[in-house]
Length: 215
Ligand SMILES: [Zn+2]
Image 1 (tube, rainbow, N blue to C red):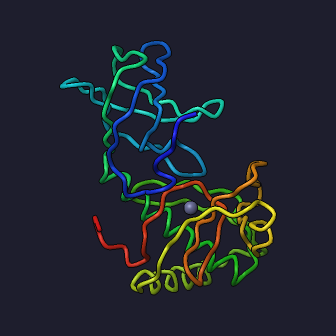
Image 2 (image 1 turned 30 degrees about the vertical axis):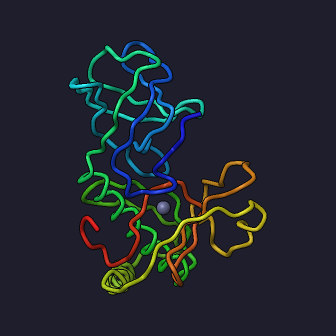
Image 3 (image 1 turned 60 degrees about the horizontal axis):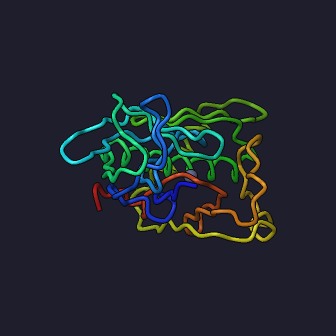
């Protein structure tokens, strides 16, 4: 099982790794990785895997049967080799910002109106949200956007930690996605935006709502 370093530290941009296996020449599994695989509405990371001076561009990262698979642009990597991973950090940081912003907006709207999130898709420069709501009122939506923007100027911490599943599921609103109930595992990773939101969540987030660049 690949060690997912982004869960413990979403600001880690590089790591050394050992190639565990390679399928069809260009689907690479590593012993550990900083690359986030597409999932939970968050797009995958891109970047590079290097072996010595040779660069393999990581064009896609996905999770298949529980394994994180890195698709590289050309064949050549082999099991047992030592490599170095580095993220396209600009892209990742944008995604961390938009992911965290999405939590804030969803939390304000869900708490304020009782709506549930039924889908979402993050991109580097925009976020799509689907909500179940009784009536659609653009004015109300805009007022929540304004409230969210106010919070992005404040010094509010974002933390993540694990809780036993039973305890985690007692937190009101810990699962906001109408469909996406967390997997049946003993511990759930909780992402907490202090005093605003607690979510069971496997994505990457910034450390503070005052979204300073490259802290
Ligand atoms: Zn999240």
